[in-house]
Image 1 (cartoon, rainbow, N blue to C red):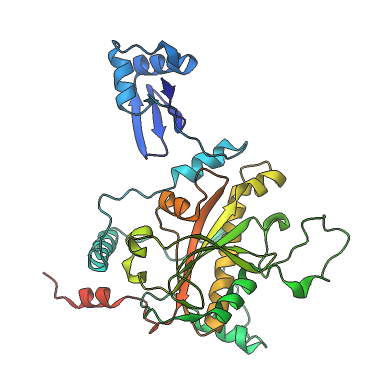
Image 2: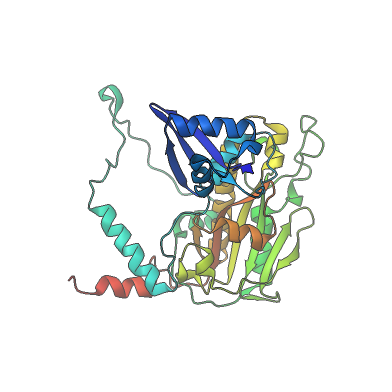
Length: 357
């Protein structure tokens, strides 16, 4: 018999809460159950199939007959609990097509709108007055200025092919180690940490990586590819998943024909190597955000529209990228393609036009 390795125990008088953070299940134990669990943690071999408490702990998944695999994470248990505990958003019914997604999402939005919205502005402290800032001026680089003005999230893509030259430019300026900055170094930079991207990275570690999802790129077979920034090259990882892309991304089927996407992952082993503190986990998300914005601005400059999400089936994505049970984990997805620029897909637009019951 084994103790489930994905348990977090919280003392809550008069008992304790046992949280299976991987399966998103909580159990409240009284003193008898808590005492028995403590003895089993000390020695799982004392499991007694005639003891009703032992059987109930087993049925609840607190005990397991077989030893469960545990990710190779490193020293930082706190960040592992947070990361795994926020994976795989529970969903009673994953939308199977764009129409189901539209109705489910609209229902969710309507439910949210039944509760009072929080204040748009944060409260001013000590009745402090707002200080007006000077009017912002346009950037001298017209391409960047236009990209900042034109970038927006779209949910209506026509599936048109993207050419490989644009993909190469997009990857290089987002994730590549910029050859143009080879001379931009000094003696303070440690050996092995001198690679420079267009976006900042915590500790200069470049802990985030990218996996390309190709559905329609001229000159490139559909599939999943790993990007290698030092060589500015791709390597094939897997064919495209058989279910529609929307099944992988929390039922968001309006992107089923998205020609190009990028899964941004984090190499936590790189972070733990330099920063032995849980706060380093935050920096992975900060870096992923920088990379996402760079991707979107470059794509917009190339004349493409963009879409992004943090909602996906973690376990399925990990398997697709072949990084399951490793210290590399997916954090974010961003994609691009030709679009009519609408913020909502046609199915949602049609649904919004339906008369109220």
